[in-house]
Image (cartoon, rainbow, N blue to C red; front, side, top):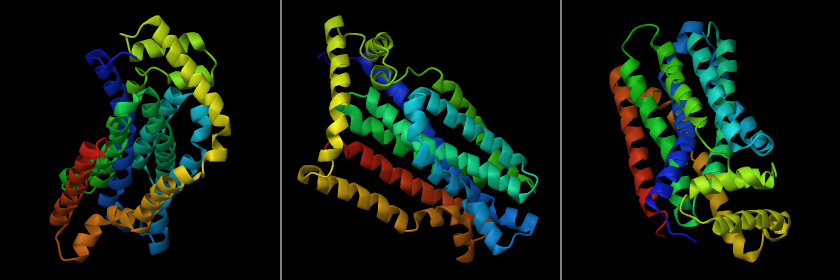
Length: 314
């Protein structure tokens, strides 16, 4: 197998980065509502229950999107699914910023949640399928990196837009349309996953063409060999479920599940959704609460960078 060349590295990094921008929109969409939630409750006179529904509407979409995201990813391909997620993010941002009443906002946020859920399935899968094994951990980590970066930028955006007047909340929610449009357009530049082309679409010619794009220095025989390896691995995976809970895999699977489970059980999403309100309740002013929210995002961002630096070395 040919060594990793600069051309190969730059191609893979760019495609992984574009795909991982879905994570940026994930993080941004999750947190951006925190700067607008009190204004929305006051503007429309929402009860605590309706306020909670409005705040959680994106999460309902996220659950459904993540449960159903595997279907379009396998049916339409990774690339088309990522583009579709971008469309959902864009529609949600524009609709949220222009929402005339609470139910319109709830539907708009729900649509954004669908985009979040679908992209959490499609983006990491796409990155894994175009990455060499020795760099897969770090490249796949770009999705998590972009989630946290999106959280930081959303807090910062809310802080900067917070003082522009009564309609600031609309700008907070609507500004996401800009990165969503950029992401959607950039996804058109991505090649399809070679694994999907070879094993789902059964198009060997296109699969070989993408493999050549991934590693331009590889010879024809090597490209053919890689394609055969992908097809054989897919055929063998049909029986993989029997060994899924084997003694060798049981511990890492349980640990991965528990990390994700306790991450949610810790209540971090509630903290992110209500960070400015929490600081206000602690005695901070409006501007100070927004600024301290930025510090929370910056802390998450810093520790994510540390994790990415060591992920392939431990």
